[in-house]
Length: 487
Image (cartoon, rainbow, N blue to C red; front, side, top):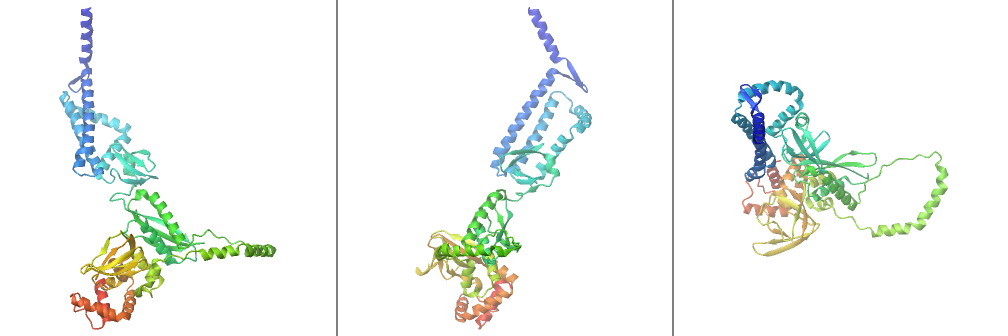
């Protein structure tokens, strides 16, 4: 029995150690194959752990962004894995040079059968090295949009907005036109078309659209939102609101929010969105005259009192920025188009209760209109209260036009919304419309006593250059505007 067991073990040992095949001068047995498989599995497992360690720990501590972490970890792990496999082959007694010859021979045959796989591997290295598409990018191509969640050597995994994952071969991404919305950042512009009734005031519509844009938290203030009058439709005046948003990947949500806001603000201004209109021609209209007369009488007796009551109870239309700008002395003679330009260059700023807007002696480079809330004006140096300004009031227009330092401190008494026109926006407006400066100078000239006082204050502070100074305050204003705004 013992001899039989010994013979069996000897035969098994011989089976594992006998030559199975040879590569060059090296004899390969089953035992060698098992050793190679085990060591290859060990190398693969270690490379995966190395990749996770680099991506989730080491590179995170080095403050490397997510996309770069994925590329660096993948390249390093695959490089070390390749070296590890070569070392295992060399340690097993195999001549790597002879294997290269065999691999070269097999490569010709395998290349024809595995062209797509080889192309995907090469494309994977291209994506990792070129870095045009990174982990976390929001991309769109071939009718598909989503976030890049994984980039491997053969495929790229894209997670859609709906939560699904799409596996895309790398070669398809490299060879296709891919729109990478987040190559530098997630900022992008979206367009929202809006049609209003033909009786609407285009300036009020523009203001309402811009106001709506500033009410959406994802809309950027720089570049500023833009409202375009795109044309005359069959039944509506067509506008388009263009806004830059912080996250283009949230475009459906942002558009929905803006549509809600626009509809609400248009309704507040009693601006209607018209239905499509069609004219109906009757061949024998006289047949309807008796019916029309009867209905008219019924409406006069039944519905007229109710309609009159409804009209009497209808609240007045709230003041708009256009109305408030027209109340400013220096802008009261502006045309609707010029007022619209003022509205477009302005922006809204929110102040929290007790928040300081500016202090005395600070540069006066902005003009403010209070839309909601109230502010307190005081001189902090001498603890003197001056006045309280409420919704509809404006201040700082001379500071903007003449570059005069602030003479008081302004603080919000409650949550306050301001409409702001700063120096940069006003300078752009005057550059585009040089004639506006003469209109402003003409209006300022009607208040020569105040201009003379302001001129003297600036002289005391040493802020009036000899080149711009003049005894005539109107001439001085013209020179100062030319200097401040580069006219």
